[in-house]
Figure 1 (cartoon, helix red, strand yellow):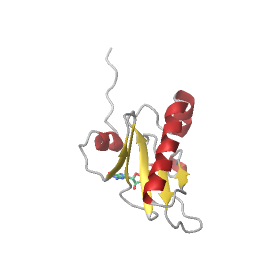
Figure 2 (cartoon, rainbow, N blue to C red):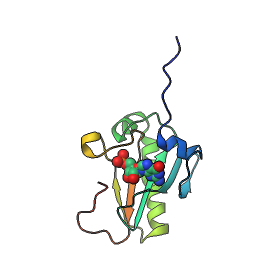
Figure 3 (cartoon, rainbow, N blue to C red):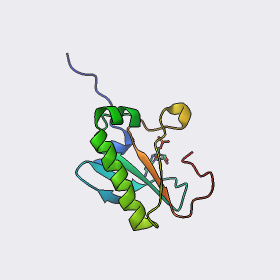
Figure 4 (cartoon, protein in one colour):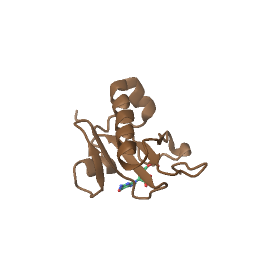
Length: 119
Ligand code: 5GP
């Protein structure tokens, strides 16, 4: 039996350079790029190159070291593009605003307004 094939996520297509994005940071395991609909002066998505984990709960259970790498990446991005301080958001589940089920962190930085959330 063959596994059912799944379409690559929009983020996997960005990682494969099939869809353009403004890439700001890359490691062997992660890619970070500007959100197409920014909600803050700095709004970057940090995305593991694997789409094995749909959300941060699955990632924390399956590969906590990779989750820690995402936090470190967020800190580098905020230091380079703002004053080093940042908000890190993982929308988890459709009713919480998650629209792409390939785990990703929203890094928001740069003079955030009170109450600014990614969605
Ligand atoms: P979620 O709602 O799942 O937490 O976040 C998905 C994010 O991906 C949204 O903020 C949305 O603006 C962003 N996004 C969706 N499609 C694209 C795209 O093709 N390119 C980029 N750069 N961002 C995207």
